[in-house]
Amino acid sequence: MDTYAHTQDKPRLELTEKIEANFYSQDLTPAAPQPRQNEKPAATKISGKEILEAIRLMDEDERRELTRALFV
Image 1 (cartoon, rainbow, N blue to C red):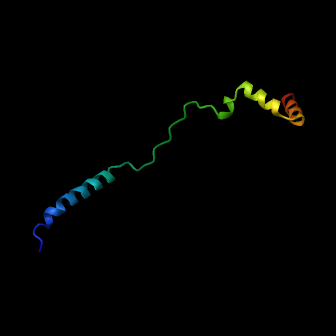
Image 2 (cartoon, helix red, strand yellow; image 1 turned 45 degrees about the vertical axis):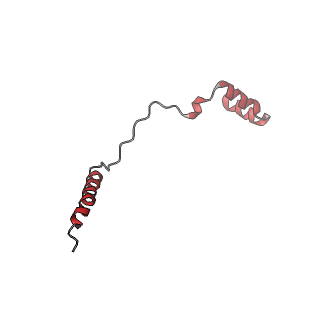
Image 3 (cartoon, rainbow, N blue to C red; image 1 turned 180 degrees about the vertical axis):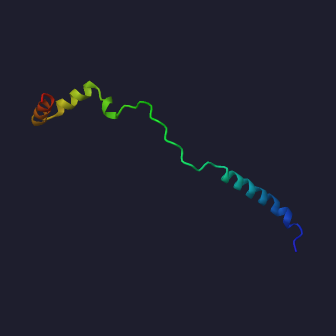
């Protein structure tokens, strides 16, 4: 029989208790999502210059369709 086994087990048992206490003290409920702070969609961040450049890169048919859509 090992008479010193209890001295070797004491730190292990203390660590086990500490880990269990830490684990069970955690709040496992999911956090409520934070409300967004007036974020604009990426589509509204396009500048006028970028729009004009996109129109310049269109072919004739695409420009015609865009013009029709704008003036309907």
